[in-house]
Amino acid sequence: MGRDILIGFVGKPSSGKSTMLNALTDATAKTGNFTFTTIEPNRAIGYAQVNCACSRFGLVDQCRPIYGGCKNGKRSIPIQLLDVAGLIPGAHTGKGLGNKFLDDLRHANALVHVVDVSGTTDAEGKACRGYDPSVDIEWLYNEMTAWIGTNLKEKWPNTRRRHIASKANPVHTLQSQFSGYGSNPTITAKVLDSLHLNAPLESWDEATLDRIVGRFVDIKFPTVIALNKIDHPDSDANISKIARREDPNRLVLASAVSEVFLRRLAKQGFVNYEEGSEFVDTIEEFPDSGLKPLSESLRTKITDIQDMVLFRHGSTGVCNVLARAIELLDLVPVYPVKNIHNFSNNPNDGVFKDCVLVKQGTTAGQVAQIVIGGEAMSIIGMNGNVGESDPIIAGKNDILSFKLRKDT
Ligand SMILES: Nc1nc2c(ncn2[C@@H]2O[C@H](COP(=O)(O)OP(=O)(O)OP(=O)(O)O)[C@@H](O)[C@H]2O)c(=O)[nH]1
Ligand SMILES: [Mg+2]
Image 1 (cartoon, rainbow, N blue to C red):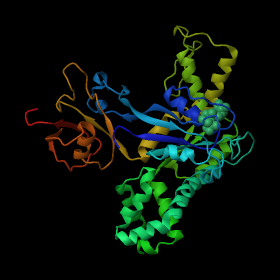
Image 2: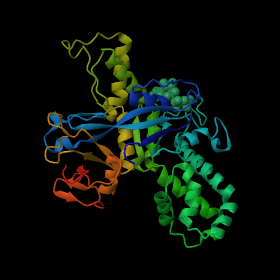
Image 3: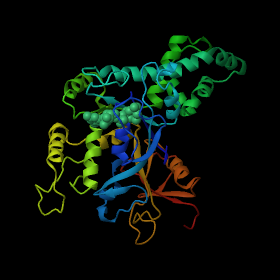
Image 4: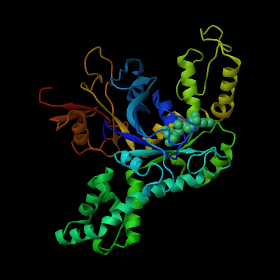
C-alpha cells in the first residue's frame, strides 16, 4: 500500500461528503443544500493521526517529518482523499449520475460512507423530516455489489468458456474480472479462500457468484460509516438505532459542518481551536489571549456546537474518520531511518523524518521496495539485522535502516 493510500467518500447527495472533505483538509470543495452539488470528483490530501515512534524514545521535541507533521507525539500522515458525486438507489443501472462515481472509486483502498444521520434528507438527498437513515447503509452496499455483480454475470458465460478452454486456475480467471476494480491476485485469492467453495468454477451458479461478489466488496472496500450531522436534534434516536445493528468498529459520529466552522473561526482569529479537540477558547474566558471579540450570533453558534457536539461526544469526530479507516485497513506505521542509533537521516536534522503506512504482516523486504524502490543489501533494525521476510511488528521492528551497499 505504501505512500499512495486512497480513501473514497461515498453516500447519497447532501449527506455531507464535500463538507467532510473540507473539514479534513481545509480544502474548498463546493458544498450546498441541493443534490448533486459535486459532479466531478474532488481530490485532496488529508492527514491520518497515529502515535509516533518519537514519543516512545522521549524525542518528541526533535521529531521533524518531511511529510505531514508531528505534534506532541501525534503524527499526521498524508493520505489521498476522493470526494465523489452523490449516489442514489438504482445508481448501478444509471439512475442519478449513474455509475460514474463507482468508476472514480475503483482504486480506493477504503471507503467512508457519509450518512446523514439527522434524517432530514430522503433516499435521494432531498430535504425532508423523519427519514430513517439506517436503510442508507444497506442500499449503498447493495449498489456496490449490484454494480460489480451485474458486470460479472454479464460476462460470465464467456469467462467460464475461456476458463475451461485455457485450463486456468480460478484465482487467475476471477482476477481477470476483478482487476478493473483495483483488485490484485492476493485480494482475489483471499476472497476465494475465505469462502471455502467446494464446487469447481465451471459449475458456479448465480448464488455462488453473488457470494463471491459480496465477499469481494467486503475485502476490497473496507468501509467506515461516518454518521454525520450529529449536531442536529433529530440525530440521537437514529444513532441509537444504527448502533444496535452495526459493527461498532466501523461507526464514527461526526459533525463536519461544526469542524469547518470552528477551523474557519480559528483562522480568522476569533477562537483558539485545535483539530479534533473538545475545547474552543474565546476572549471571554481568556481576556489576554489577543483573540477577536465575538458577535452575539457567533457566540450562540459556538455554544450550540459545544452543547450538541463537543461536550456530548468529545470532539466533532471528523479526525476519527481517517483514524478508523487506517484501523480497518490494518495499517501500521514504519519509520525508515538512515542511522538506526539516533533515528536521524543527517546530523542536526531531527529524527523520524520519514514514515510509511503498511499493512500489518508486510515484510521488511516489501517495505524496502516501497521506500528505496528495490532490494536492500541489508536491513538493520534496532536489534540488529532484519531478514527480508521478517514481518513488520508495530512497536517492535518498525524502525528500519535500508543499506544499499555493504559499506553504508
Ligand atoms: N447540520 C449539519 N449540516 C451539515 C453537516 N455537514 C454538511 N451539512 C450540510 O449538508 C448540506 C450538503 O453538504 P455537502 O457537503 O454539499 O453534501 P454532499 O454529500 O457533498 O452532496 P453532493 O455533492 O450533492 O453529493 C450542506 O448544506 C451542508 O452545510 C453537519 O455536520 N451538520
Ligand atoms: Mg459534494
